[in-house]
Length: 532
Image 1 (cartoon, rainbow, N blue to C red):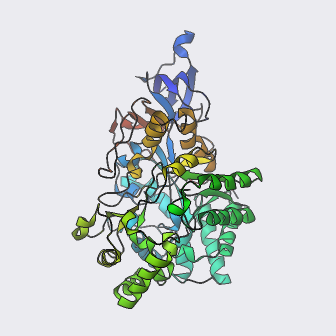
Image 2: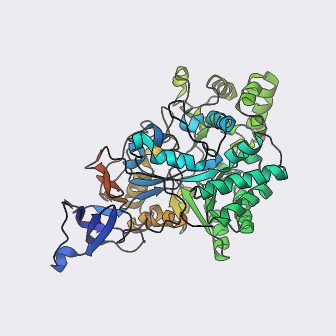
Image 3: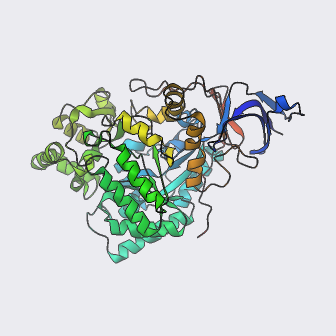
């Protein structure tokens, strides 16, 4: 064999008890698991390399169900942000906005719209226009060597709507809806695993439920799943969850709820109500899963807080409205007094809004500061040309812990990698689960937590040979020290890499070895395999 891990404590992803074993790897697959090899006195497996894993847990690689590395994987071959956490697969195309499928106009507009998430893309050769083209680009990245970790993709509904009908706030015509159906179908045929929405982001939020239901019917035909950032995580959050459950039930489509939180003061302590809603739907046959990150603040763009009517017509129209005094006052009124749909129906509390990144280096002095009012927010939006990112300190620890215990929960970082002070979840989600919520707080057992981060997401993605330590499975593996694994990333120092994760393998090759990033690029696109 190529490699044997000797005397590892195997937490295999199933949720079952751990066991001690020698695990052998050959040609990128797990080919041998010999339990209690030392105690049994049997002949132990041999290999060209034998690594003593005494004191380490061996588990499947972690799957980040909500990632914003769409351009980062192409920009940075190292990508230790995720590789060092033990992430071996990321799901991209989130929140209804990404870079395929597009035409030239749509690509230019989406680049502007999500500069705060991914940068403006000027340093990446955006030479694709289709979902298949983007996945091919991942496979041939960095001189044909590939990418740091594997990646799956969701067709972004907001981008599809932008492509088919621009930034107009109206129902689609029959012809436009048919075009959107075709774009979603083509993306799934080319390898996407489902469809995402960002229903507090424009233009995706302009879609009525009937339009979303029709697109979900297409997703269901291809065996994919729908991943909505739904219409509210604040006022009306439970109604927004009910809406997503109902429309996917009508469409016959699997549902995966993105960053399934209950935020703002109106939802403190209300996580059990959400879980009761989901349990009722699950008991009646619904196919539902969800992801969360183990932190209380959220992260998005400053632009996202604005009322949806401000964004009609696209980014340049937004800037024109912000520059106009009367219109800017109307925006302020919606934000501060009425509660805009972009701010989840809750009047904005500027004291909870922290600037995490800017596109214009001249504005770097604002990073790390709380917004002191609308005048400052307006100035940043205009001078940074909508590229400002924020942390929103509106979550509740009790809700976070309650939701992560649920049987359909999975882990997702929602990691925005841009900005001088990004949310530490981008660098720390997975070790934070293992270190803080397993070892320190005991919210989850180690075996249960690993299942949340491995086999459950693999099942949602319908991956037949990932997510478990099993003979024949792909050797995407993590070895970590359960006594020391932790994330030192903080809000003041968010880019600190994890500790206690010495080895990470993608396709049987070390991407992290002895705690250091190797030059291996073993990641590839992971495409939908189920036929229609």
